[in-house]
Length: 288
Ligand SMILES: NC(=O)c1ccc[n+]([C@@H]2O[C@H](COP(=O)([O-])OP(=O)(O)OC[C@H]3O[C@@H](n4cnc5c(N)ncnc54)[C@H](OP(=O)(O)O)[C@@H]3O)[C@@H](O)[C@H]2O)c1
Image 1: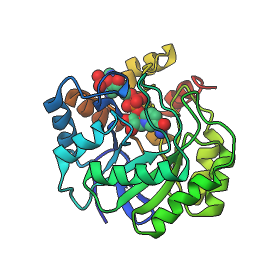
Image 2 (image 1 turned 60 degrees about the vertical axis):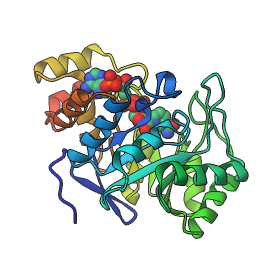
Image 3 (image 1 turned 90 degrees about the vertical axis):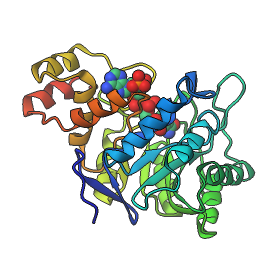
Image 4 (image 1 turned 180 degrees about the vertical axis):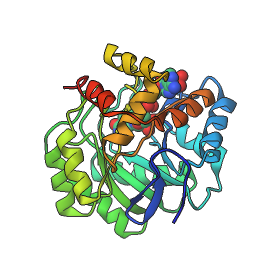
């Protein structure tokens, strides 16, 4: 059992123990997640500091850059500590305009898994999420062919655990009927509460829910209620947003992104804030 002083403690993804406070690497690539970072050494420093702070869950995708964040992770952290678990995603690629066209045919998925293995310098990927939908969000539709392709790669020993991302509740059910999943990674934060029911249902089943854009992503969370609670607690709105997620449900794992070591420290400290019943009521009203 791994102990951690990070807020939220730990969670078990299948047989992998991770800190509930993780790190999302997407924002380490260049503008709009294309190309190299403006500050290469700064990006390496953030990754190393995340691990120094005890974080054992890093979220990435070979599509970030493309290849850039995986290469940075490898440069900063390889050979990886046994306790560190890297989650990645397949199912979308990049076009020259920086778009994220779906790539969920079997051949593209196989190639994406092998690309992730190569760029991360791994022989087995700890966790692969099938990224569904599109930039507008989850889209209904069958996922069996794509998910079964990943199950086959898992049987071949290239993947330890599977998850789905940007998925509808029906697609989560469809995936679970094919093979066990350890997490769902969807957009969710104080202001976007569309998955409330799904989170509670997954918690009952011991499946993690990993909100992406926990701080609002490209449009940072802004709300007068959030600012009022933050002012009362003498904390930043970002801290309150992260603390709220950790207290929302025990199966929520945080992967906030930052390219700044100072923000990383601020977020770790802030996520440990204790929110009173009154604070929670005020915050609950934001997304309802
Ligand atoms: N499955 C999917 O489809 C999908 C989609 C999007 C993202 N993701 C994953 O989710 C992770 C998190 O998403 P995200 O990084 O895009 O969004 P996010 O965590 O909601 O927000 C990151 C943004 O917040 C800023 N920030 C972080 N800490 C801050 C602080 N203390 N004060 C002020 N600003 C702060 C960062 O800027 P600085 O760099 O200046 O700190 C960055 O611009 C990604 O890294 C990625 O791994 C998955």
